[in-house]
Image (tube, rainbow, N blue to C red; front, side, top):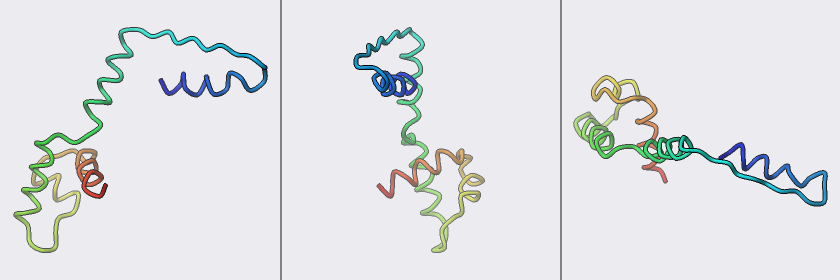
Length: 86
């Protein structure tokens, strides 16, 4: 999809008329579903992080400490953090 979008933007630059054709297959739905499924942290990850932070002292926890205490991937920790500041 990103590649198509970039190519469409380039299509009309050097000519007065351009045509874009999108050919897609079954793998496209799988590709988009993967990003939909992984775009946001799961409720389990959110609950685990909130629980770990609630149990700690007032100084909080580092990313490494969260990983150790709840076995959560760094990417998921950053997703939860990003969701909280938005």
